[in-house]
Amino acid sequence: MNTQQVTYRLVFKGRLDFGNERTFEKVQHHWKVRTENYFKTYLLFKPEDVLSAPELALTVPQQKIVGSEKSWRMTTEMFRELAQYATAGYVAGWCIGDAGVVEQTYIEPLSDKGAVQAFLEGKQLVGIPGKEVEAAQALSRAIEKYERHALAYERRGYVNYKLGNYSDAMHDFGRSISFNPHHPDAYYGRGKVHMLKNNWAAAAEDFELTIKNSLALQPIHWLARVRKAECLVNLKKYAEASKELKLFLTRKFGEGDPCFLRQRRACYLLGKSLLGLNDPAGAIEAFDRAILMKNIEDQRSEIESLLHRAIARHQLGHPEYTLDLRTAAQMGSAEAARLLDTWQP
Image (tube, rainbow, N blue to C red):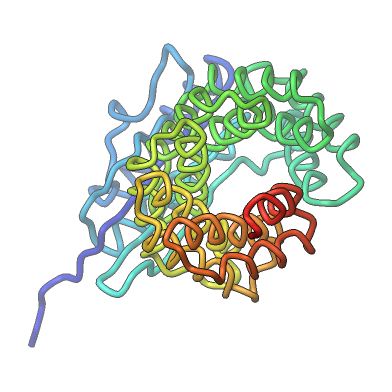
């Protein structure tokens, strides 16, 4: 009989803020008593490694651990119990087997504390079209009740971004990062604001921090790679951009994954990078791929792919460039219309 215990790669990351010394002491006591009476030796972390008295927080650094199914279950249960003492934060976890992710969890406070309930209300409202103002109001209440609420600042920053309040969004994302420098969403949001202002270098830096503070298991990790590549293209760092885009395009994304909808954009950016690297033939292949992705609605990338495929074809002396320019011009590209007029014999 095979008695070998099955092991998994277990990944955890996150932070829980407890807000005051009294609650933090309760957390320490809870950990001690529950470990002695129930969890025993199955927890994957020691309290001295994750509990910080100066910060009044539990911080789980992003790391991979080899452990058993029981260790996974016991550790997630402990985090779930401790989360109910918390005022803000979350802990995410993934249990990974040979065939991929077996189970994942997202643990957050669900107690009746005012800051907790205001944040949960705001987070729910963020996802409802037309409820942005109400969402911002609820998130502001969460911040009023707990001024170091990194997640509330990040979500309010996202709302301000959607409403076009870009200065307020920058402020909120910056505050979120100051309270939790390991939360990728705040860097991602700030990077998008930098892009709107054509601050390509600053945006690329924020997307790089998004990548470093996220896992390849998370969509935001790959979304940040595409946006970083777009910044690099605008900085004319074509070789670096090409590397990021090829990495993104080798990964398979299901239709329910937000990264699926970015594939057409990634193909266009790869084509533009290769064009910048004086590889018009390779660029045409990438533009072909983007144009053929009819199942992904992204007219901007389609028009730009047609325009730049025409440029690549013109460089190679292929007469088909005129058809691409006509099509792009009919779809609204003023540059395609100008080139068509300029290049026509």
